[in-house]
Amino acid sequence: MNKKLYQIDNEIAWEKVTDKVYRKIMCYDENIMMVKVKFEKGGIGALHKHHHVQATYVESGVFEVNIGGELKTLKAGDTFFVTSNIEHGVVNIEEGILVDVFNPAREDFLK
Image (cartoon, rainbow, N blue to C red; front, side, top):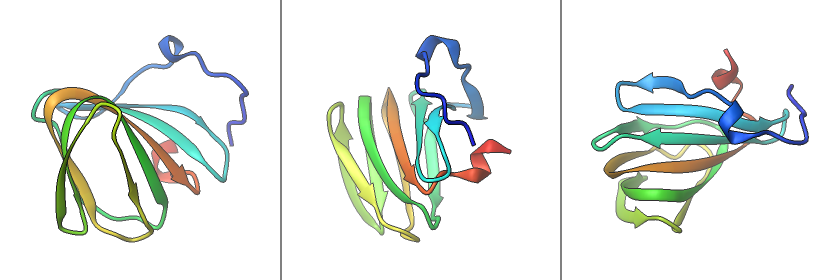
């Protein structure tokens, strides 16, 4: 696992996830992972669930967030928390960036 002490944002390339969603893995080890996710307007983080606990910070933009069927509109500076195996997803309303932190690390993102 990658245990670099420092990562420089502009040295990490964006990885295309879908037509309107991109991500970059900022830092991680086996216990924790931080991922920046960029959404173009209308980008969707489809409903899904995983065993990882997730905390997310809205760095910029506006998102409609669905956690377990409860919808909430969040903007820059807001956060949300997803416990293990709860279905969740987002719809981007205004282009923006989410910063996700996962425990344990999302090994599926490293493949």
